[in-house]
Image 1: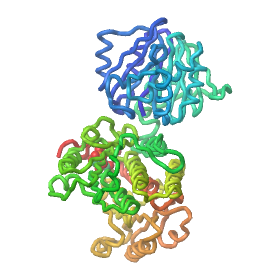
Image 2: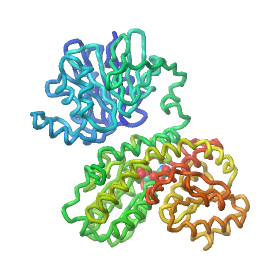
Image 3: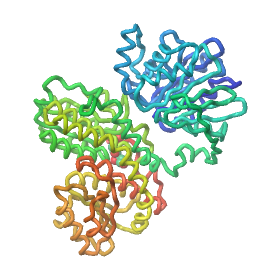
Amino acid sequence: MCGIMGYVGPAEAAPILIDGLQRLEYRGYDSAGIAVHDGSVVTIRKAEGKLERLVALLAESPPSGSTGIGHTRWATHGPPTDFNAHPHTDPAGDIAVVHNGIIENFLALREELGEKGSRFTSDTDTEILAHLIADEYEEDLLEAVRRAVRRAEGAYALVAMSRKEPGRIVAVRMISPLIIGLGEGETFLASDIPAILHRTRRILVIENGEIVDITADGVRIETLAGAPVARETLEISWNAEQAEKGGYPHFMIKEIFEQPDVITETLSGRIRGSSDVALEGVGFPEGFVAGLDKIWITACGTAYHAGLVGKEIFERKLRIPVDVVYAHELRYRDPIIRPNSLTIAISQSGETADTLAAAELAKGRGSRLLAITNVVGSTLSRISDDVLYTRAGPEIAVASTKAYLAMLIGEYLLTVRMGRDLGRYTDAESAEMIDGLRHLPQAAEEVLGRSEDIARLAEGFAGADDVYFLGRGVDYAVAMEGSLKMKEISYIHSEAMPAGELKHGTLALVTRGTPVVTVLTQRYVYDKTVSAIMEVKARGAHTIAVAYDDDGNAAKHADEVVRIPRVPDSLSPVLSAIPLQLLAYYVAVARGHDIDQPRNLAKSVTVE
Ligand code: M6R
C-alpha cells in the first residue's frame, strides 16, 4: 500500500519523482526516499516523516541524474525511521530497490543470505530483495530480478535499478499494482495513476506475474517465464480527483472494493503450512496463554464492533471469558483487571484518545497489552507488549470499512495461534479454519460482484426515517457495524439489536414499510432469528435478510434476500459486513450526502 514512482528520460529525475510522490501523499505516509542515477553514481536520499522532510533534505544537497526511483512508505516491517525508509540497496550499493507489499518468506531469506555473509541495515523485507538481486546479478538487471523474484514469495510490486546500467529500470508486479506512463522520449512508472496523470495520459497497466524493462524509449513487458506480452495502451480521461480515487466516485467505495486484497495482505506471511499461524510482533511468554483467565477487549466505534466479533470467536474456541468494553467506559470504571489477563486494544489509527487511555489503564493493572492496529509506529503500537498489524493500507474515508475487515482477519489469526497454544485446535480443525480464511478473498470478490443488486435495494431505503438491524451472536455484532455505517453516512436513524431483544420494547417502533435488515448466517440460532423476521413482518416491516447462497429458506421469510457465498459460520462476518457497507454507501449516495467526510465526524478522534 506504499507509493511508488519511477522515471527514465532526459530531465532531472529528482523533481519529477518528488512531484509524483506528492501527488500520492493525500493517502498519508510515514517516510519517503529516492534513488537517482547520474550515469556513474546512484545517490540515495531518504527521511522519516512527511515528504516535506525529504524535500528539505534534497534542497540542502540535490542529487543529479535522469534515471530514478522513489517511494513513500506505509510501514509494515519495522517502524517508520530513516533507515527503514526506501530505497534500499545491497551492501555494495550497486542495486537500489523500492517495494510495495510483503515478502512472506523474508525471515528464511534473511537467514539464508546472512549465512552467506550478508549484513542488513534495516528491519525491512525490502532490503532482502536488493541483496537477492545482487546475489543473482550477472550484468543484466532484468535477468537478475527475474531470478530473484523466483526466490521471493508474497504479494508485492518491486522496482529496481543497477549502478552498472544507467537509463534502465526493471519492475515486477506480483499482485500489488504498477502502471507505466508513456511520454515523448521519457517513461514513467508508478503504483497509482494520480502520480503521473499530469505528465501523460497514455498508460500501460502491468498485470500479475509480469516483469517490465523500462528505458526512455519505452517498455518491454514479459511474463516471469519469459514470454513477450503485448499490452494495449489506455488513454485515461479521468481528472486528478477521479484518479486519486482510482476512478471510483468516493474513497469509501474504493476502500470497500479493496477488501479482497486487504484480506490477502493481512493473511500474507502469517500462515505456516496447512494448519498453523505465526504472528510476528506477538511474543507471548511460554505458558502465558495457558495461564490466562480473562481477555479484555477495548476499542471505540467500528473497532469496538470488530471486538464484538472477537469475543464470540475467542470464547467459542478458546473457552476463556472475554469482556468487550468501550474504551471511554473502561477508562473511567474501576475494572477488575488482573495480571493473568490479556487486554486487546483495537484501533485503526492507533491514536484514538479513549482507546489509548483504556489500554494504559489495563497495562497499569498488570494485564498484558496486545494492539490490533493498522498504523505501524502509532502510539498504541508503542505502548503495547504485542502488536498485530492489520495491513489495510491508508484508510481515507471517515467511515471505516477495509480496516474493519482487516481487524476481523487479525482476530481469526490470533484465535488459531492461541487455540494451538491451548491445544484446542487439532491439526485438522486449524487446517479447516485456515482453508476457510484462504478462500475469503475470492468469496469477498463474489459479494462485491453483486454490488448492483445492493444499489437497487438501497433505492427503497433512501426515504426511510428509521432502519433496524438484527442478528444473533456474530450476526448481531455485524448488525451493529451495519447500523453504524448506515447512520454515519446516510444520517438515517438506525439501531441494531440482538434479534431476541426486539419484542422487549423496540418492536413498538416498527411500522408499515420500516426497513429491517436481518443478518441470518448462524445455524445454531437460525430458527430463532427467523422468528424475529416474522415478528416485524407481521407489523408491516420491509424485511431484508443477509443469507448464504444455499439457504433456500431465507426467501420464504424475508421480502428480499442479499446473498453471500457459503463459508464456515464463524467466518461469515467477513462476508456479511460487505453488503451492509454497500447498502449504507448507496443509501447515502441516493440522499446526496458527503460520503467521505460525513458531517460532525473526524477520521481520528484524538481528543476525549
Ligand atoms: O482509529 P480507531 O479505529 O480507533 O477509530 C475508532 C472509531 O473512531 C472509528 O471506528 C469510527 O467509529 C469510524 N468512523 C466508524 O466508521
